[in-house]
Length: 155
Ligand code: 4NP
Image (cartoon, rainbow, N blue to C red; front, side):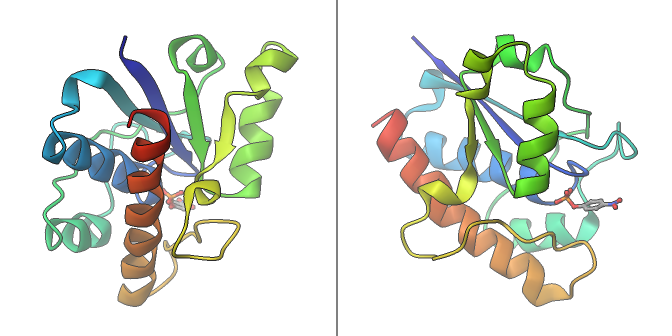
C-alpha cells in the first residue's frame, strides 16, 4: 500500500514545495517512488497557481531538486486524502488543526522538525524575508527531516 504525504507551510512557494521536491528525489534514489504519493499546500491561498519562489527554485536546483509544483491552498478535504500531514511551524499547525473534521484527524498532523536528527529546532523558519543563507538553512533542515521521515515511515 502506498502512503500519502502532504507538506504544508504558509505560502506553498518556499518550504513545503522544497520538502515535496526533496521527498520525491529521495524516494526515487532509494527505489521507493511507488510506495508514496507526495503533495504540498499552503495555509494561505494568495500564491495559488504560482511556481515556487525563484530563490528557492535556484537553491534547490543547485542540490539536484527540481521544484515544479504549483501552489495551492490547504483544505479540510486533505485530511481524508493524506495519511501524514507535515507542517513547518506552530502557526501552520494551528491553522491546519482548526480545519480538522474530528479529533482523530488531528493525529495526522506532525511537525516536520520532529523528524530531525542533525538539527535541534522546533520549526522550519520562513525564509521569505531572509537572504540566501535562509534558503540554504531550510534545505539543510528539510534534507535531514525528509530522510528520517522515509526511514521511519516507509523503510
Ligand atoms: P512559505 O514562505 O510559507 O515557506 O511558502 C512564504 C511565502 C509567502 C509568504 C510568506 C511565507 N507571503 O507572505 O506571501
